[in-house]
Length: 254
Ligand code: PGA
Image (cartoon, rainbow, N blue to C red):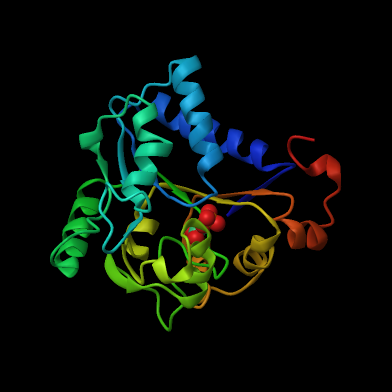
């Protein structure tokens, strides 16, 4: 895995956007795997700017998101479908019919998960964007005794409910379940970019880089993928910077 450290969240986001833009310009019908959460917001804002100012064309791009809360539909402002529409899709020229998320309102969520797995099989990602939870999750693949393989219905970890309550009025409102891609689909992507920013991710990033591959740190499975770029701001890279003894000149963007 390749690691890049930037002096700020903005620099990290702009550089991640450049990689996504290069992917889309080289292959206009790229399939992108997308993520929600605070972390990719800067990346999405920069992609919108590139669409507006630099003719970045998304008309042929197809996207699949990692996950969706169970019980929330696309009109619910806490759903990930709503998030993606507000933060990216409605502001670029992507075809709304080419942007997929799991169905949070499915009558039979297990069936919906299986259908999403089949869809993902048909649309292998050229590039997958990932955030990482403070507990090391990617998508909603929470720490567990084994790595979840296929798209599945999952209970959110208590730590995830606590982390995500900042988006809701209180923790009681955070959905307890989600449909998430499993590790098979995440690892099927040709290239993966994992983004992390802020001091509260530093320990998890240290586990990811220095720890063993374990389902207790779900992101650690990325060590088995041949093309992963980990893009960090200085705060998230804190323990790496200490361990490797980088000085400021080594930090991109200085
Ligand atoms: P965050 O979430 O970007 O809001 O920190 C990341 C995640 O939980 O995967």
